[in-house]
Length: 298
Image (cartoon, rainbow, N blue to C red; front, side):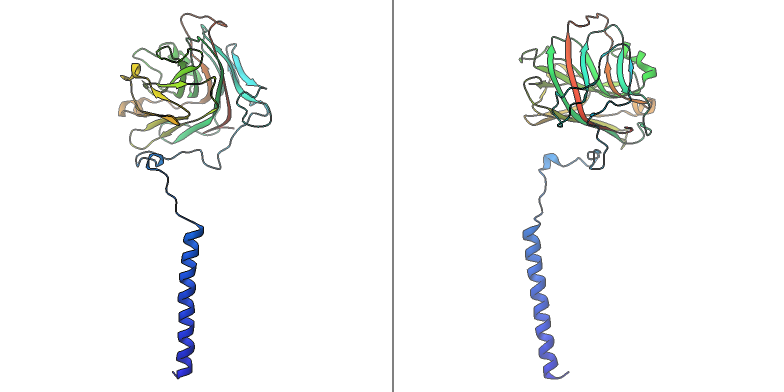
């Protein structure tokens, strides 16, 4: 190789190294690596949120093809309490103490939901009225054919085909009774401990998600935005609870026998649970949901 060739080769190598160096510096400056706080990272044994960017979300501009049981004062509503979009439309209404089990739900899921696979539900909720309800309403997965289980739900033989979130009056609190609820989750054979949800009427919308991971014996997780507190009076019940100013979380890990006895839910929607002391129209919760997404949605 002659001197001229060596000189040209030296220049090319120098330029290549310089370009690579500048590219690395520009890339690190334009696309910084940002790690979320440790509290936001999923545990290794839990699946991350299943409501990805491709999830189907219903904003209820039109009525869904859902089924009602009983004569509920809840269903499709051309209102906009959740103010989730510019057009009116949401699901919900008035839930009162009734002597019958009532629901408003999609009773034929578009895909199989079972405790052997992952499933989820998410949305936004708003409660414009809480009037001494002494009542429980649920949103989630259930089996309409086994609603009789809800009549004995607090006895030893508890329904096995549900994965749902239950909202109820919170009378064990320092907050005004017309602005607070408690929330817990129910799954195959269990009821969890409760979170307190203050400022449900005077506050803003809350985002929520219910998800199930089949890893191990299975884990049912509920998360909700906004201020939450752990309700100590029900701390003897199941679950790992966390609460704070920004959000709250309930995690229940199924036992082996609970997973074995679980029944696949066939519906998703609202349930108004039967009471032995009906007082329809007197005690009430007005409750609405919008921007809803769930496994099996049509």
